[in-house]
Length: 193
Image (cartoon, rainbow, N blue to C red):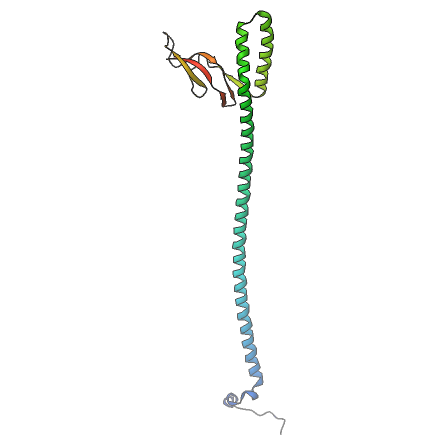
């Protein structure tokens, strides 16, 4: 055999069996393998992108749930605080309502006692009023004002005299008291009609 390469026409190369075309077969196989790897990489990339989108959606959902939970807990805490504050104020108002008749009796006693006793009762009544003031309790004494059912309870009426308008408070039988804008006890009054 000679070491010379022989020139083979192109149509004969196509007819040469695969064993005789090893470089081309390897090249084709390598090309197929590259295409397969590229396709696998693309599908893996698509799968990863889908997983990423799914994870982002789950994260957004969890964040939304967390923020709602935080808001609900904050609202619960505020409601609870308001309930406690109102319970305290209501309890305080209940005690003060029970003490108010003591002040009423002291005022009645002041109108009917002698001069010596009057000084003592005035001192006790002054300290009683200071205690109410310290607790934020104010009197409702609407004499001469227009009747307001949010602060007063009309227990009597009297025909209006000439020059006096109807619907005004003529006399207070029992003082009312309020804490802020909340009425603790309505003033019992006589109203002109």
